Image 1 (cartoon, rainbow, N blue to C red):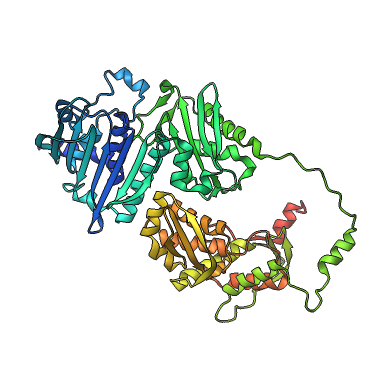
Image 2: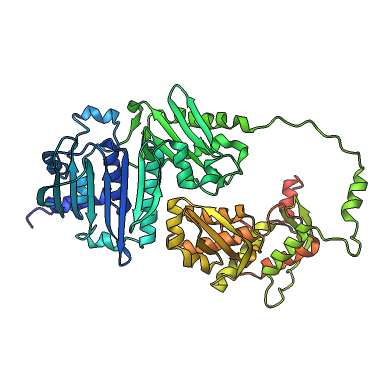
Length: 573
């Protein structure tokens, strides 16, 4: 057997593989082209998206930057050509958004690309058309100073990658997210995002607080808390929202390092740590923060798409971020009020008050009415079987039901997790949730990315019971919710459900995640007082479902202590 099994790939294949590392979807094109525009000194950037036949048809990015000569234009589309590096040592202090010279060459390799660019002082602009990485046309045309890049038929010559592109709504949601983050990282630049001739995002370019207000609405924009702290390792600037503005995941913690947008779970965690106990442990803040760090301490060359950075003094940077947020929040902590004396009552009197039966006509406490409503939503068509061998004894911390089995086991049941499991199985079995019209529609301010995803997922939301309609610029109105939530749902609850769902992205599991969220928010909460009769009904419902031992998130609903385990805990054996 002779001949080598290893062969060198041809240049066309190499360019397509390289393009796949940088250009994943239309949003990748937008990111690379906008970053090039920022490096060119643009003060205004317009991103225009056209869609046809259920797909993104073209991406156009225009700027008023410095422009390029005809000679530079021809070089710019070749692999690894750049004006931003001279020698290898320059990699240790990269101050520009791009530097590898991959973007235009990668885009040109998998699309039909045209560039029109004019410098100040040139009478005409230079125009270049590249198809599949090969230059096809060059000429001169009238155009304003700056550069406009148009990308059409993306992935036309790589059908496998084109096949995996999502719907227009999903892809546009990713594009809006990219422009959102870039506008927040560079609030000195005016951004505009247009889809099929309709403006979907517009930032003023006059500062960060104004940009935040334009993207996320006045509710967030009017209550921002400034952050501005200088430490030996970095400077942290930006804004955070008060603790009352909470998100179920960190999708609205926007971070930039030296003007470069980054995704960094450690830094996002440091922001969350700065809020301490001002936020529940499972909630995240809204924050837009910029870290200015010595360029020599930042490695931006660790990810093909430049989404991540490596920090050589990361622990110190994280500590600086946490302390900066803590300092900004100090003004929100009011002094402790003086203790108000209360009349002395004996334990016996308090117990009597709590246990005394209500007289006829005395109103039932509101929490009892709400709990009864929640349990009615999960009442089975057929009567639930009696609880098998469990005698309910009471409730601990308004969170756990306590029971005893005939075998002498001690049983603790998490009332929220238990009801959540019952709700989830019933909602999943129905396929489409009934809806309840709200007495007053809930109006939600949306970022451009959220707005795009709302449009994409309207049918999914409706199937779960949420009727959502556009309501003015950058807002939607929720007119109905799943019947299990009732007709007087706080706006905060609706915002949390929708925010948590959108934060996870509208993917293949979107409908399933939405059912889990509705079950979670519709279930009896920890801290709710349950009567003995209500507790027995809940336990009976739990024992009738298919998987009673865990909630939809995988947490246990029931914990059992056998007599031998109890004896061990008390050192009796």
